[in-house]
Amino acid sequence: MKHTEDHVCPDRSIILEQTKTNIEKFGLQIISIDHTDYSPPFSYSIGLYESYGHPEIICFGLSAKLCHALLNHIAEVIQSGEMIQLEHEYSDIFFKDGRCQFLKVDAENMNDYFGIAQSYYADEKFPALQLVWTDRNNKFPWEEGFQDEFLYDQPLLDRNMNFKFREPTNLGIFTTRQWIEERQPILTVLHEKNGDWQFLTAEPLADNDYKLVGLKHLIDRDPSLNEMFDLQYGQAADRKFIGYEWVITELEDEDE
Image 1: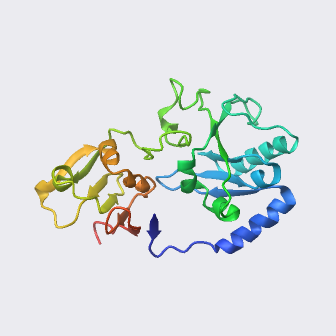
Image 2 (image 1 turned 120 degrees about the vertical axis):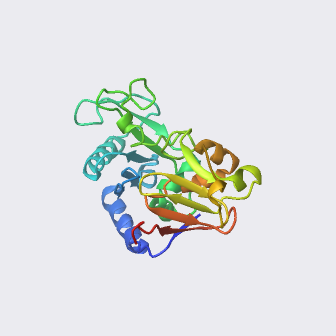
Image 3 (image 1 turned 60 degrees about the horizontal axis):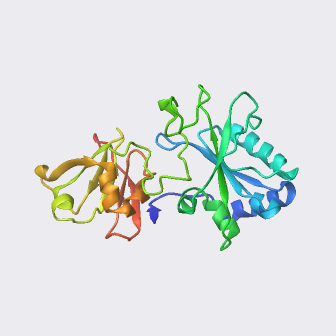
């Protein structure tokens, strides 16, 4: 669970009212989340499940305009009575040459991306599929030769629930001797503006307390740290103990 200090969100009641109106008129609402320096953009539907008994659709790494066009096109296909098939290769979804497939979104990943949809459906669980596109070489992310520059633009939501970070599993990150030797809990996470991560135990720390370990080793020991996978560049997160709410703040510039 995370809480961001000094962050003003749009009024959710207004968004939900607009969503209800658009579903009644068009059969769906499309929610788009813009990219950041760290996180890719994504868009998803709300209403396909309510209107047609079909899983909602989510797509990453493309512009909001393109995602709107794709999701509306898919909605038209569904309205005609066709159900999108899992792991079936489609060549007619994109308006230019290119392949795509649809993967089942694992329930463990729903909370991370479908916030407005979950509010709209309230206590009712709904399924979702992820549209996965190919790179310039027409390769899927799981195929040999997929371009590295697109590797983290579309996290695959049918897998990797135990490691959600967008970096390699063996990425070197700084933690503490106290975490390694004494198994003290991680209470502070820093994601520096240059991309470096620090997972720290309670202060104060001496210079020789900082140690370098692989990111997956840290997550394997404390899976709750997966909650930090979308901590943005230049942010810090603090908690009182494992399982407590994270409080997210902005890191100060070094010259301030």
